[in-house]
Length: 440
Image 1 (cartoon, rainbow, N blue to C red):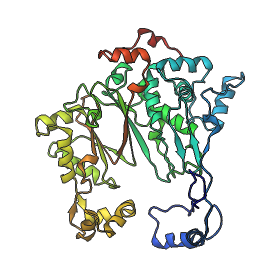
Image 2 (image 1 turned 90 degrees about the vertical axis):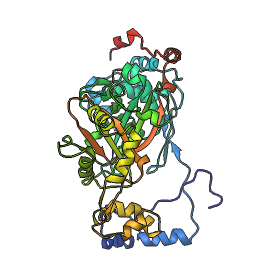
Image 3 (image 1 turned 120 degrees about the vertical axis):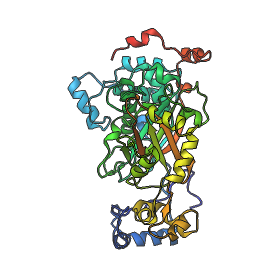
Image 4 (image 1 turned 180 degrees about the vertical axis):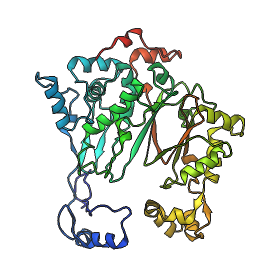
């Protein structure tokens, strides 16, 4: 394998599905049975790979559609036929799109100072060995399709720059969330307050949808090739796109916690499996007690947690319960959200992901493995992995509990148009009046 070209990849050996939650007997049958791709016994392929010279697969190929910033122009046709064409090619989420004409794409690009041919990210698809290199123009096409306006475009470009897909090539029901912080959220009218997660706000809707559409166009929605989710997840239609309610929050904004300046605009990506709504903390229970109940129903995959609090709850936690910062409350939760060791280890995903760590003596998993079945442990033991976000309209003391992990936070300012960069230097960051005149 020494002579294989740089960028070559190891061959992949496949087994049947499902793996997570399958019994040891079933897994043993997978290993002794045939590889569903090649038909050869999996164990023989493993032995051959370990004992015989192998030729690595060729370097990743670059997708043809991403080689140029110039979109392919289709000939004239009826809108119905073009809508069908986009759907049949896997470029949409199943809903109608705004057709990306040359004029609309060029108008979208006025929302950024970036060169139309600039490559925004490099996205590698493991399953198909494709390297996708979307340009600003490619993302502008998608933004138009989603129904975005030019002022939304910097946020969409920032999301694209992460190279993250909103759709995961997993058999499980992964879901994602987008959080926008900083001045741009207010300037483009994002909803961080009343009914922020509901289908009522244009900016939240189209920005979140654009992420899913770019994931489709990058190739992450090919059934049984890059899309394996057994049931899917309806949250991926707009990926719970929302802004943090910085004005009503008593704590520092999320992006400041991640090292950005308050006056910077950012977008953060979260990913996980489960989100549960509270019905509000009962009069005889604290928020911590209520969260203990909610997290008792969420499989603790890893130690990640994301808690989304209405401003009323955040204010009560700070002013009446003494949690001066989000970090203070996260430390408290890391010590006080508990479950029995028996319940923890009976979760198949937990055993799959951290069981080997326990067997190697890694703490605290090794100690938890030895704990009595009814002994209480604190699975969310890392306060740095507990994300606290403030969103809501202050009409009820509600909150959401999720197992989401924070993936990344990136700057939006890098993608702002030149006039916005100049104005943001003096702190104004205003949008021109004629931006409201944009029509699809």
